[in-house]
Image (tube, rainbow, N blue to C red; front, side, top):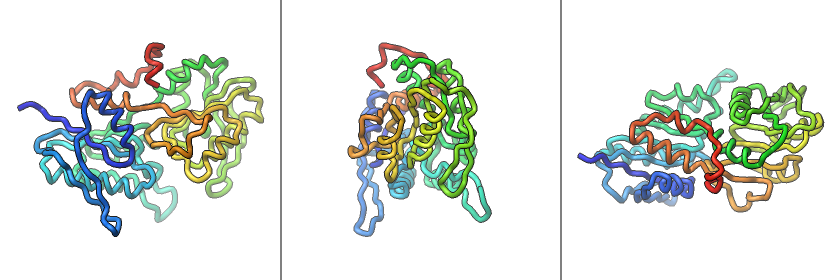
Length: 323
């Protein structure tokens, strides 16, 4: 029998799902998400999925709990409709920061979400730039953590920046900064800071030479904008030149956009793993698409090909229009 592959999109990031489908040369299959008056979610799949390999695209971004429930209920619907396999594609994996007990009597919510996804029927998970790589160990099914570095590296290469230094905003991001440095052939610097109280940090020192350098701050997400703007201020005070920032997941909650706009950052570069609302689109924020990376990854999964090829950065001037 011919293998059937079906691609579904839920409500969190429909535009990205369309880009992924286009990259795979596929059409999105039909399903409907409805809510009852009390807020309960209902799913209706409008095509037969019996014996099909199904992929469900849903970022668990704000409203996090609503989007998570949509995903869980969709997986349950597919399982009960006799889908052969259910792969959940989560460009942004919510609750990923709750990956350990930092204090007594705290939950490990990231593990809880993993258990819920598997219980609902998920047989594979694909996400991008997870906050903590140990999250992969929370699952008992195959997990693929895609990387956004190749697309950021291509974009930065086209800008022809001079005297570049890759900056990690804290010690935890050093590995990420080294990867960027390897792709862009640039040294790294680290901002040494300490937590003075909840959600507040004090910059203690900058490890590395940033004077008169073009600094690129790299992180996995930008939520309140405080980390990015404080890091940029510290770099400027230490004589840095132009300052850019790259963050995969642009949550940009509260007044983050205003902070970015008023900061000394020249440009904040994010991806569309989370849809950027129209009122948050300002000249300082650039959005790159990850649709092609996800499309290539899912195609390789379907064909049982290795994913290692999509993690390799090769700058190609002819592909700049895809960014």
